[in-house]
Length: 333
Image 1 (tube, rainbow, N blue to C red):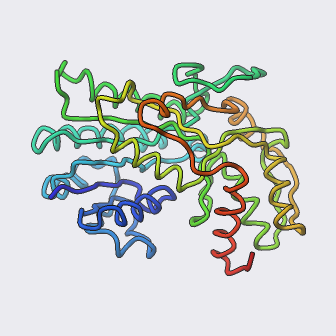
Image 2: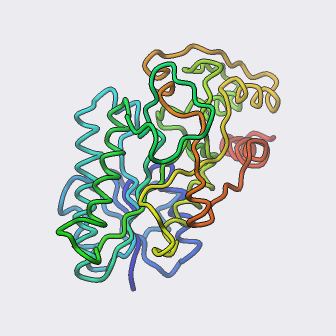
Image 3: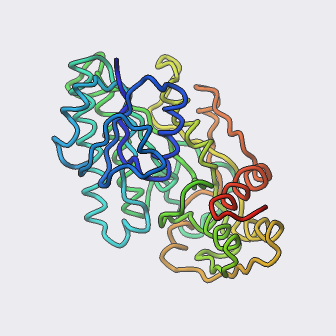
């Protein structure tokens, strides 16, 4: 039997993805790789838990070959804020780690059959000029001039994946089927924010539920696209399972809804009237988000593999975020 391999398993996306993979195919082994053992929430669902560095060429090769891994979800990465603090480490983990996993995918594909390699990319691959106002959603081939090491890494890794899938040794039928999703900001009700540049949205709610004041690190008018974690996981699974002959590109935008920081604060206040949200923009983080589009054009994903988000802004807060985060803290809604 073939198996899944998930790197960065303890991250927000990793935990949610593993739960869905186990529910959808409980008989299929799940191999995980992370710097730490699986957290308690996912440990019982994991078949083999490997602890190690994604940049180590030998860290998971033996287990992956033994179980004939046919699908890799390469989630391990340093996030945007950390990358700006240590860009060389960011490059090492995000680029060298991805290259290592692509090598493994090619080795697996050559030995056991074609491997699907799913890569979460990011809105950070875009870089709008300073003061550039976008009235239309940004398509996949527009404004690809990232201003952060994280965005540069993600865009380069997309090209690496495309190379391994289409051009490596000019192979007619590559052993690697690379598929990337360019995510907007992702918000989860089950896991805590981990320092991402778009985490102010979920941090507002976490602070309100705990009765703590919160100073948002972007300006009130800052508007970005967001997606709920269940939609993000569903997008990963849909793209992984999409017939190859329907795919017209290797990297796709996916979108949820666009909302300003002030609108998020207003929604939080509606549910928690005592919430205390202020705005104290961080110049570094503000500069980053100002280079990102207000909205992504995901029409190619809609056409090629029938993508559409389940959550709009109202259902995201009322049906998912508020109940989920309140349950995390044992607070009644």
